[in-house]
Length: 376
Image (cartoon, rainbow, N blue to C red):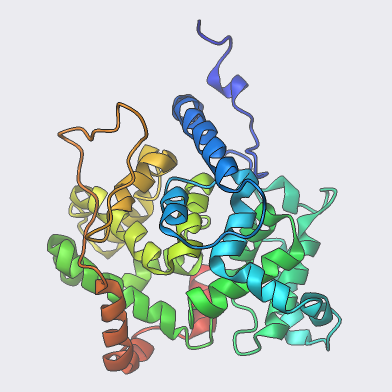
């Protein structure tokens, strides 16, 4: 029996994380997707509850890695992220440290930079509005100030507000958000947010090398039009796909990012580019190329997060692609294979670029302040 009313009437206008759905949101397509995804979520929740029965921390293992790739239920997400990233261990080893940071010496420049970004952090999220009770702006401000005092070499960089904002939404805890931000900025993505942004610039170069190896036609198009990778993927990397891809898809990516590290960002980028290769190759200019890279982050391919993660899942040789559970798990003969590249390729390429191309990277890309002015 068909449910009464229109999909717009049945799907809430505000999502579970507090984001308002845009005016052009496809309620019918989302309802169709989510009705199937809800079955998967329920099955995964049962398996995770069984795995975590008895409490305790989450330790990395083959089983945990497999479970994470298939999705972490919202109710377990903060706990799992804290465990696999090492954030829980760091927090346990440093009791009271976060609160001491908040009570530390003020730095007017740091605090003013963070305060300036508060009102432009998720204006479409009702939980971050000043009228909200409680308003998460204060929580977000505290996390960013504490991190700026903790890591003075980084301080604050635009883009970190979006990342910390997601952490606050998921953990509902200032202290846990701080330690997860430390795991990302300090260990998983070193030098992404430092003044020189060498890690970010290097990884964009690495992505270009990967595309040249796996998708040479796209690389040739970029060369022909003179399009720098920083023009099309910088926001993907520095915001870790926040405000680029749909919320649930970003969270599924982050599940793997906290568990497996920065290689996940390359796999996401390559999956997007490969799936839309024919569309990208129709670009006729620099502006058209940039617009097409924006377009590929929209639509059903990225909204249907479970299918997207399946396509991404086999991006390293030797890793089996994550497939649906049950009798319908066999891939369609017409289904595109996941993006694959040799084991360790991204890491070795990053090491090579870090040593051989650091000067070229620094010369070709703007410093952090100029970068922020362009993208934010």
